[in-house]
Image 1: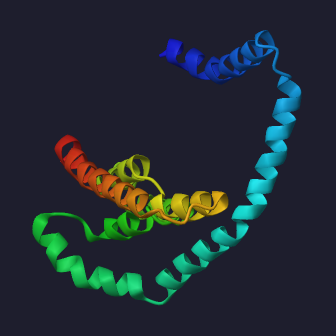
Image 2 (image 1 turned 120 degrees about the vertical axis):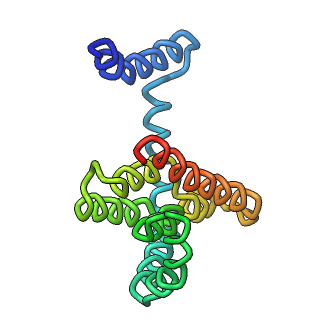
Length: 176
């Protein structure tokens, strides 16, 4: 265990040092390149703000309008019939949309049910194995001007769906 701690402590500085050394060997002006990348990063950050605000407003409207609760009440009997806790569904729905909202739901589930409960473990596994697909597409694709994102959306949502199903299966098998 001590070796893993040492590796995790030194890995990022070693990678950064390697990149700087490699750039210097290749005669790349590393500092100037870093500063130029920082300038581009700030420009990108400002360009994604409208997309970010739009996504956050959409998430808030979805949650506050009662649409999420309506959907939950609609599918609760079916989930209970196959042994899936209905409390986990809001996380499964929100996670592809917003990482912060999903983290809030995960924190709430863990605070309510406990970290060692089935729901706590399932929420943690689901949080770690899925991604914020719609957020990524909206913000990053919008920032670079990509308008046709249909295939990326399909693949991303399909991957999230598989990760959610596998989270349920694995947590059920491991923690029963």
